[in-house]
Image (cartoon, rainbow, N blue to C red; front, side):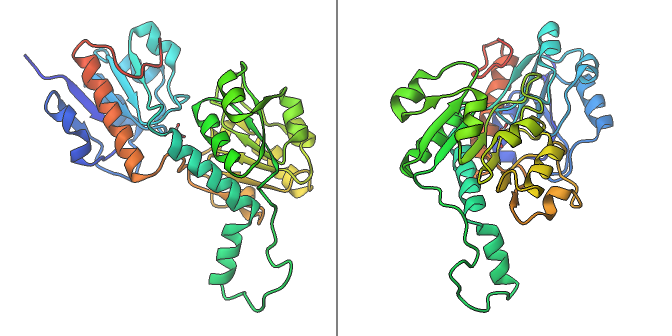
Length: 322
Ligand code: DGY
């Protein structure tokens, strides 16, 4: 009997994909830093029983229609907005993601971004390296305090809760907004549920951790930024398209909010000439929420386990289309 065929859309370490190679014929796109071309993705999908994909790959009807024997798509991310899940469900293709293993790592980065933006860490480090530090002065690169302030978390899932847990160490007042109330977060972390409008009005730090869906696309629009405090700092570690970037730019330029820390952008990689990158009060990162070596390895292992399970006719650990 022929071995099943698995295509991986990025070059990953051989060690990390070992569980696949014993069971299947595995082919990888040969580059680590360059995304698979559409042409190759479509022609590989045609032959594949399983695709191991990245969040930068658009997995739409065309890809799934090409993949006549496709049984499973394992996406190396907790988010799966790059995949047409309802079409996959129609075709009986299992979609798997990588929740849990990245929760703390992503929360660490989110909190680091919050601290860096509030305390102007990146700007200060660049200032020193550029030889601009001529004297100590009382308000040199003075930022905003984080401790004892109010954090408003939009999207109180597992990562939201892990960020809230970190915020308790800074003795912050924790507000949250979510589709439904999270009693565990209220009980264990002292978080208070708010409407979206209330959260925007009361928070010193507005932290976006909500998945991208049709309901959350451009949730942070002009009106939302106008409702925030003029001293507020906006952090986005979810997906770029949850934000109207033009409205965010205007809010920053007009002093409607004080700063932004962004790990994600509507178009990734963001163009180096994007107006947001010219602002001193913006800290921009290249979508590294879950990017620690340990966590990325765990995510790869989970993707492999999910693919193996489906190819063996078993239930995968983290199925998205329940
Ligand atoms: C994900 O996995 O969806 C996150 O964006 C982590 O960076």
